[in-house]
Length: 198
Image 1 (tube, one colour):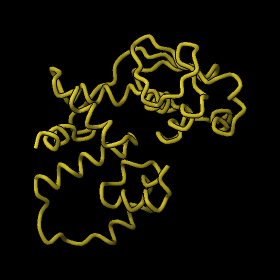
Image 2 (cartoon, helix red, strand yellow; image 1 turned 120 degrees about the horizontal axis):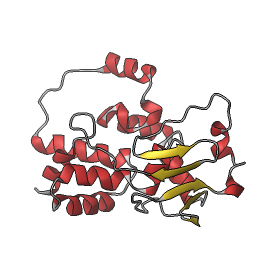
Image 3 (tube, rainbow, N blue to C red; image 1 turned 180 degrees about the vertical axis):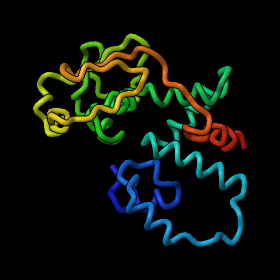
């Protein structure tokens, strides 16, 4: 897992949205003060590289994993939608989308340490792909873990994606639909395909 200093350095280059820790007013003000005019505008390659890195760090995946996802999605009817679907339906992404973890990296840790069950089975692979009808749950023996302490608070706020139905009392979730890709609101996936097609 990246140290905080590294996250801030990366966020300065790629944008605050890729890490939850850098989505603060303090960080935004700090960046506004330090902004200087670029000598030259970014080249197409530079822009594509930045967008590719944004996707990679947002989902905390390796270069090889992203290249593989992009190659498979490129051959689908709607490549951007297919890539978004592949990234969002990873087990770690779904645990985050269900609101069980406050950050994607926290969700990855929960999965890697065996705290999450998929259809009743312990799964430790963050890249495990989920499909409609799959059920997630926090392992009974893990509910007392500090990782889930924030969920036990009376004022706990669950951030839930519309394609996942969550039972906050039982700490279970079910995939009931598909994540939607909205142009302009999500990451710039077309630029990622442009990067890999060079």
